[in-house]
Amino acid sequence: MHLPDGFLDVPTSVGAGVVAAAAVAVSLRGARRELADQAVPLAGLVAAFVFAAQMVKFPVGAGTSGHLMGGALAAILVGPYTAVLCLSVVLIVQALLFADGGVSALGVNVTLMGVITAVVGYAVFRLVVRALPGGRAATTAASFTAALVSIPVAALAFVGAFALGGTADVPLGALTTAMVGVHTLIGIGEGVITAATVGSVLAVRPDLVHGMRDRRPQLELRPAAATPQEA
Amino acid sequence: MNDSTRPRSVDRRTRWLLLAGLLAALVLAGVVSYYASTAPDGLEKVAADTGIAEREREHTLSGSPLKDYGVAGVEDAQVSGGLAGVAGVAITLVVAGGAFWALRRRSTGPGAGPGAGPGAGSGRTPA
Image 1 (tube, rainbow over the protein chains, first blue to last red):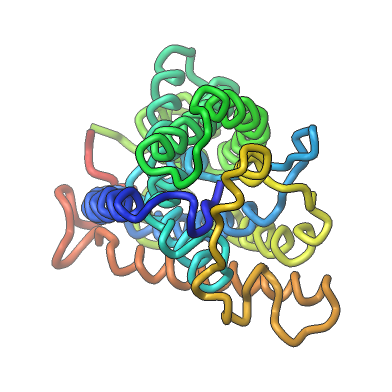
Image 2: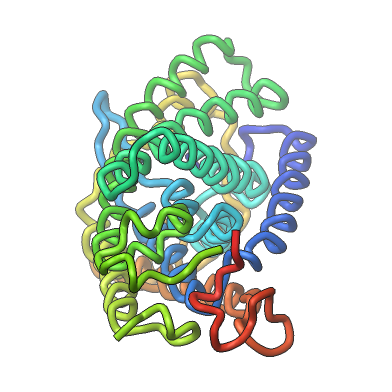
């Protein structure tokens, strides 16, 4: 959902830039709490993986494609603040080096694809995990749901931004239907990829999944006596 | 061996996981992306259908050698795309990794969080 230059007027683009900058500032502080020494390599890898996955577009029917956005995935694996930073790096690299996403649209793109998907994805993940019994299947299902929901919500946020400062005259109802419709389909793909990735990490190192750090005893492969004592 | 008593090192299983993830990223960007769908993505399609696309302006950094995920000057489309993808993965890894390394919360020494020291377990602060 990379906006090029020109879709939104200057005040909206600048305003979104302020929102994105504030979110990044908050996330820089918050990420410190999430980034223990061991988490640094995984966080860097998550950013690189999201970049790669965003290059692989999958068809969703009717002559349209989608790609993983990765906000929910990143938030579940390395925490929401670190996820915002991961996605921001990806989007900045894409805009500045690959001409993917307008430079003037960077604020909007970071807000939509970095902040909203990560925050919504993490919130939904935590809610679903709380509602389900513990274990890997539940965590995987929660990952799917969180990722699925995050995409149409981001699409709605785009409509909101467009309502504020879109440069073309388009009826908002039709725009909403179109955007939410296709991005729900894309959300299914996002859900599948996210669940598969989180599931893979869970199978090997469940303690690396930030979103499950307080549920570790239910996921550990070793007997309970060997698990670290968490306060 | 109890992995939880090694707070600062990245143990073997984690290392293999990270390497596998990096390999996956490189393969996705360097090889799989060439075979990806070329259909417009959701926003592009909606923009085209609604007329929003007519407002698009040319990218301000159109002179970049990696523009549109290809390496300028490399003739073969698959090689060009693959190299650009690999470059992007590497650049992202270095920039993000570097930033997170600088931000990290050390488990001992200056800047250490509560519960610092060799017995800090996995280094995460208690809930």
